[in-house]
View 1: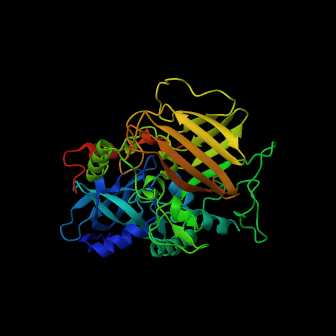
View 2: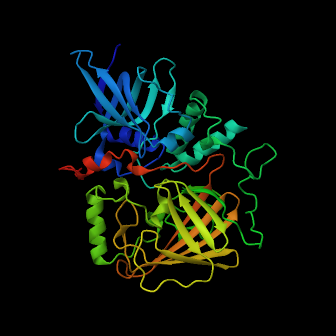
View 3: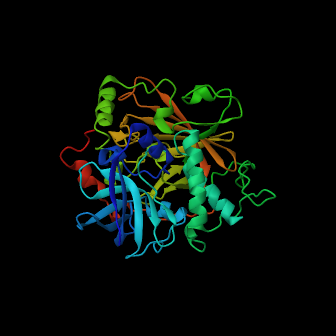
Length: 137
Length: 303
């Protein structure tokens, strides 16, 4: 498995574009937990799925291609109802599937991201992530 | 046809985006998701809604007349979500804060809730200070992400869906979030005197023509009116004037008279849009709540 880890600090305008382009399914103040300027794009293997309220979590083993070290990242998505209404089912992604996740990293520096999109490597299918990045519908 | 309806459902969710360009890009993006993702036909969450007026092409006729109850009053029956898209009318700027003047007939995006009040909220000095601090703390103390019950009127501008229907003697509002309910009595009872404050407060309703007027007292003290942290207190009287101008829209004019937190009453004017071909599904926040730990952690709420 070839995995990549890219933690990019985006210029403000680019971050603004991304903030504006995500669907809204807010549960909390995004800014208190995530840093919109710390963008993540990670590819790895799904190890666990929590299809739960208030938000779904997907756990992904990501291998650093230089050091070979494997980190298990957690990605927070929207709530199950939002994902279902946007075409997901709990079976859309299975444990062992390779996915590429784009999102933003937690401010506390842990291996946690808020997912904006998830692409299934085997089919190229892009799945709605129901990001909680914005508030006040 | 069902695919078109699904697209409408999704674009409804996307209409809440800030700004037209972002909304357009997101709709294109969602159309891609629509065509590329597994479709959950057969699930109740996407089951067709009965008794929806349709256009010749099969799409829902959202501009059709509002349904009526047997006694001739408008019926609010439906599944509703806050809607930031407003049609520009000559008096819109007197109801909501607009980024710039609009032309009659065009669609404009407005904030829902207190952020749309023209001229801002008339906060008492202590309340202004409190809101300022809460906002500066990035709303880390917001009760909503802690899975606390949501309070009215904030329910109307959180992104969770509400179901409404009249039954004899009551208007009922159900909310997916934590399976909340609200009862608005129409059986002629008076408001309670000196009530024990609760999250939804105590509500009675009556008709004034085709407008349903709800009066509420007994709201819990120190609730958050919005994510910014504007307060609402147990001194508040809330008056909601609700109309259904067409099948697809509810209009709410929500007046908050809370002399403890505000120097004068103010009115929040907003629309809700009907959600077609989806059902109410439970959404219990405490199932797997992971945000509190980070929101309470040392350093939380700092930029």
